[in-house]
Image (cartoon, rainbow, N blue to C red; front, top):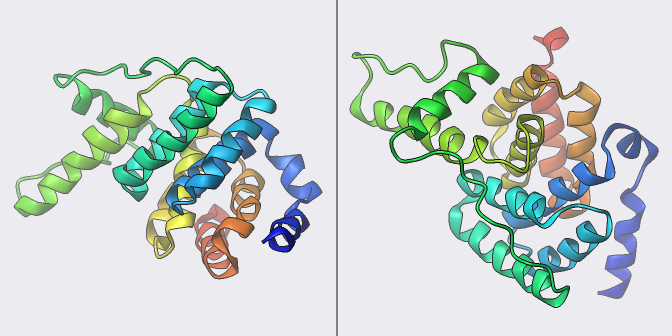
Length: 224
């Protein structure tokens, strides 16, 4: 085990460090570990993130933001691990970063969704099947309303975290392409996107990494 852990150090590179600051690296890794259910490593990484200057609220939000993309139970278990690290470091648990209510979460979520993907996104039409209406509404009021509207992280942070969780999930190439365009829309560069994917090779392995890179590059405007 010690040998394998030491081998993980091979994956650092100037390209990643030049295009992804240390704070964002820690957020991406925490979200990735959440998606891959690596809960002991979440605890270890929480301590490292704090040492790098990442706040408890930012750590919490990176884990929370993974929930709608990899599943709430994974995020809950990851947060238990992070809270253990906070307790050992005598760090007070962050307050809730929620900004919406049940009455406005759909409206606020749709607004954020459209600010990223354009005014046509999230439209529910009469000719949609009932199940399609449900999932379209879910995307607006859950993924975007419940999560993108939270404080502590901005929309650029949240888009790069979304991309990282989709990479960790595997089999999400269509969504990866969409969120590559979303990342570009909010101001994350092509190099930042690729650096975030490459950063997590040791957690995701090469097949998922290469699939994610191909999906991302295929969505770059010059390749469409």
